Length: 362
Image (cartoon, rainbow, N blue to C red; front, side, top):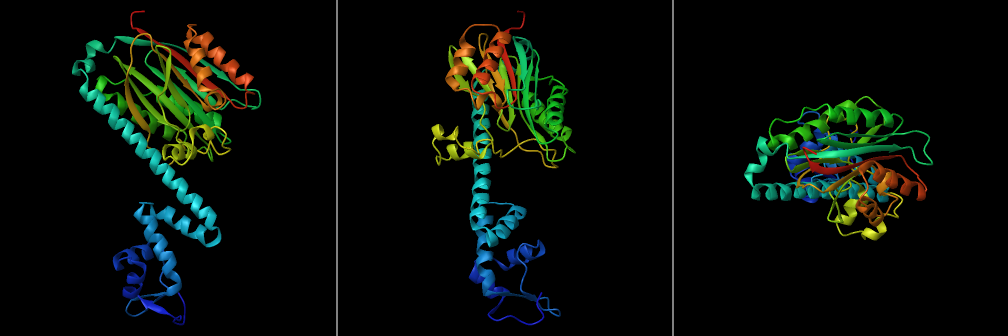
């Protein structure tokens, strides 16, 4: 607050008209510290602004129109004053996150529509034991990293992989996987998505307190003939059926969001130096990231692969497909996949789960 009234002072009404923000919005932005008036009358409480503040006010208004949270708006505005290019990158990263979350919700809606159109009897307890998973887990440190920060779990109903990052990345990945594995199996098939959602929240809590550390997490839970998926980060899940490989998850990365938005060619994405820049991860924050959730129908003979980006980032999809389709059991198949990462230089840790969908009695 200034002691003398500045030149070109605007009343709150005039400033509202110039900035195209309502007086109510200006009061809210003042209270939040986002857009302070140049002077406040000590007797009437009336707010005054300067013409120089119009540009910032308009920027605030535009950012709010794309639903950017107030805290992020403040950071972008502060950045814009010293580094306009950096502010532009921050806006782009925010919108990439929005695109990614929208795509995840679209996929969940599509999978739920498919489920509603299916046979209601598939959610009965009688079908819950129809299929099982025969799985193998392999962890590999790679040829460059000095420690192992990936973790994995494989059981007859639940598969999971996690990729830790930061100084406590190993603890974060292990804690996330252990927390998810401890979530009780739902009594009803229809509750499986809720169970996985709860599991990821529990996993997020498990990594709280690990400074500057966190983990990605990708999980699959089998109930009856339906596979529920929950995913945060850039680890991946794949399905091999009749020799064709389908990716079941979408990377929560800036690069993937740009691909989804049509701003980046998929062929260029793999070579980007920022391809691992995450939009979402389990970081122990008070508000857990919203996971990508989906439900897929599976059948005996299908093969699943869950892996961290130490595999998917360096081994082409076609080589992954050939390895999975070779007809060997899950463990030797996983060893082949690890060998392929070594041939590509083994630059990162790998967690790899290969699982065959088999009749439960097998």
